Length: 383
Image 1: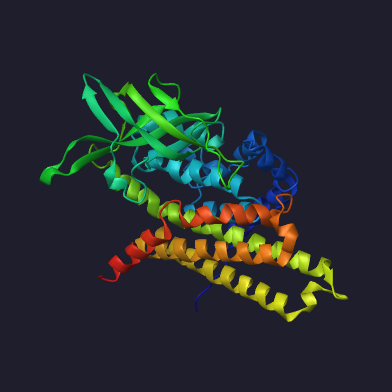
Image 2 (image 1 turned 60 degrees about the vertical axis):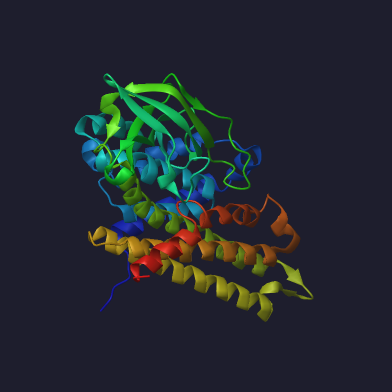
């Protein structure tokens, strides 16, 4: 018989993060969002809770948990706010995990302890101005001069790249030519503050306004040869595997947003009165919320299934793509319906559903658009 319960340790973690999100994040995050201000104090508290080290072994200062634990934390945070959730997601799955998966012993010892504590954040530099979905079109270059890599190029839409506590960015760069004339793409660690490494003005975004997102530039930026992450020429393959994991994490975050829409709509349906009854009395509202709950439940099962295969060490690329597609669409649909239920108040940023609506769309774009997920699924079907 299939058991879909999550177990006592997972449930204890989920409840802890749920309480933190409700009591610590919810009362203040609206102000950070309006001011487009990064919530350093909240991030520090998350660090002290061990959230940034959840899937990393204790040897490097982590909690010794697994990726599903991270997913549960992301879901609970996103029920309240996506800015803090994406800061955690990018800091762990895109920032720390490349070092944890592919770094040398020295690189892990150098970077991971502070990242696990949340004292520092790391970023993932893949997307470029001319290459998002087509990440293989990388134009940033790195040439080896003596014992140093000299990097030139630019990156776009990089989360956690310009905070006061950002310690480094791992970037993909063309380091030569592989067999058949293909680009040899490698991954290189660039510490913050390295001469020639520029952080551009933060973006003016539609959503995720309390998170940090910048473009990056590299102009004859020199880093030691030993900053190569993993095997030379395997950078693109490494990052694709990191993205598979990241898609499960984004799926979990999306489910959290979808669930938050249900939570807020249920509360409002009991409070708001129209034509002599609370609006939850009317079948139109009942059916809309029922559909929202159904989407959320189905989406959660899809990311649970992908996470289960990942933790068993089985191939999960297709399941990750399915989860990312289903969950992000559930988040967008629920955000639209929740805004409709709230009416004019749903258009006000002071209400969570207004932020949910603004935050939901990027979930269908970041870490692989919905179209990319469909392409991956079709390939696994032999098309």
